[in-house]
Image (cartoon, rainbow over all chains, first blue to last red; front, side, top):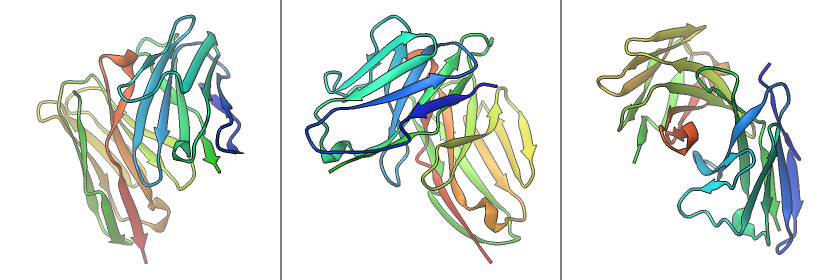
Length: 117
Length: 112
């Protein structure tokens, strides 16, 4: 149980275009999902916290107009990178928090490798 | 602001040797995690430590937690090549809906 999927696993896009990444909790309901970004050889940095049915909360320094997050259901959150630039190339990892567990454990997806050319 | 510091950041060790990775964090948290990451992959959960004095072991890895010292250790016993990976500790934030704050990671290379 507690499986989180991401789609696509890898995407290459041209500078100026937009890319949508999906994060799904497959066997549990997730009221909260988190989006992290990881640059090569670096750690994971939290970008935003996404709550079902409400606006996402962005970390300082993360442009909310550039990284659009939608959490329309208890099993799906999407991250859209708008007007992507090469510096947005990174590994994007989502995690989902299980509302059913007392300790609100979270589970990580397999990640999406974004390359902007 | 919750800060998580790991050391060492890079570790090259011979097979069969023992070593410890340290993780310090700056403010109180109710749980600490250890993850493994292989190149190009996402995180693999290793341990969740919930209370002071907690110790968990899986194979050649053992993790412990001292909440008073705000310190966790990941001890590697008789290292083998398959343990080569990057290891992250992470501490759960009380705000941000319980998101995780990660250390910088320890890149471990086990050589023959």
